[in-house]
Amino acid sequence: MPRASTLRIVRLAALALVLIVIIYKVTNPSSLTTLSRAAGYHEKLASSPGPEQKAPVTSGDKPAAPAKEEVKSEEKPAVDFKTPVDEGKDYVRANATFVTLARNQDIWSLVKSIRHVEDRFNRKYHYDWVFLNDDDFDDNFKEITSSLISGNVKYGKIPKEHWGYPDWIDQEKAAEVREQMRQKQIIYGDSISYRHMCRFESGFFFQQELMKAYKYYWRVEPDIILHCDVDYDVFKYMEKNGYDYGFTLSLYEYIDTIPTLWNSVKKFIKEHPEHIAENNLMNWLSEDNGITYNRCHFWSNFEIGNLDFWRSKAYGDFFELLDREGGFFYERWGDAPVHSIAAGLLLPKDKVHFFDDIGYWHVPFSSCPTNKADRLKLKCSCNPADNFVWKGYSCTPRYYDVMEMKRPSEWHQQS
Ligand SMILES: Nc1nc2c(ncn2[C@@H]2O[C@H](COP(=O)(O)OP(=O)(O)O)[C@@H](O)[C@H]2O)c(=O)[nH]1
Ligand SMILES: [Mg+2]
Image (tube, rainbow, N blue to C red):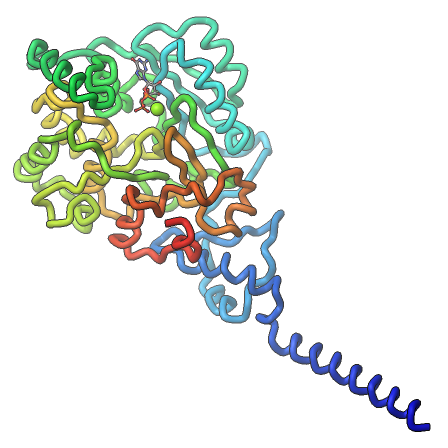
């Protein structure tokens, strides 16, 4: 019958169509949506620079298998430098500690930072935490902080010679400068304690008795947020990759706080050419090969670093020259540009690491992992639209250029 045979033909055609689609999908796996989504993630892993070799996650939240092209990059065995979560009590930690400079009154701003660090990282690793203060910590501070921290907690009082005026500083001149800066409304321009703090963080935090036992540190300030899980041991990661300085945010310094800093740096370069590393980050710090400073600096309220670098002869000579120049008091040199210029000139550039996977906030800027796949994997709570890393006032795009690093694929959506 004509109607029945038409129906049969339609059914056969439909069946053939389904078969064609199945055959096409099996022979072209990259056309599957799950695989193409995973490809962006692996592309980033494969494009990571230098010795870093971020190996894909091995267990737990497994991304889907890589698309065909990426399989090639797995021919070279990737080294998993990211020591995964290990909650066992026999876990062997790196020789490392958190370090926080604080006053007793900072306690309620600090508890929030501690909770973030513990919840996102330290509850899995139990690293120590050293608190430093120019005064005595009170019982309330000690009781609350020690109740929150899963590693050993230590409290140190900074000796007078590390928190005060060196004898070559003309204190009247310093007071005049503070008054001028107050009138110009320069942030912390009229503060004495802020200057002692910046000089301490520049020259002395790593010399404290309690810090002498450690090699690596992670600096934490009050009122910071960790937006994402940190699902590997960052200290071991520093150690295995030979990194000496790690950062999350970089930006331009206010010129009014450091008008003569670069002149002093140039003096140092002339007096101590032996300390200047080959293949350093000068091109990140300067656009004219060292004649002027472009004011780029790593934001030092977050730092993961190697204390031996700060204790080196090179950095010791650097700090001593700057300290003699008096700019911590006659201007308002911050520890951030001081640390950054030192890391940029005294270290080869492959010793500095950008932690693109640590979501971090300190008022008023956030870093947030750029690619969506990373934010999901790390359970991030940050809005990528707020990611400062690719914005105009950030120096991190320049860092990528100088390091010849490939930018993560979604960077332009956040610029
Ligand atoms: N013990 C002590 N810590 C200080 C003092 N001033 C600042 N700090 C600490 O130094 C760090 C930087 O200070 P903060 O006020 O956060 O400066 P900002 O981040 O540059 O705005 C924080 O960890 C503060 O708790 C001080 O006078 N005494
Ligand atoms: Mg702060």
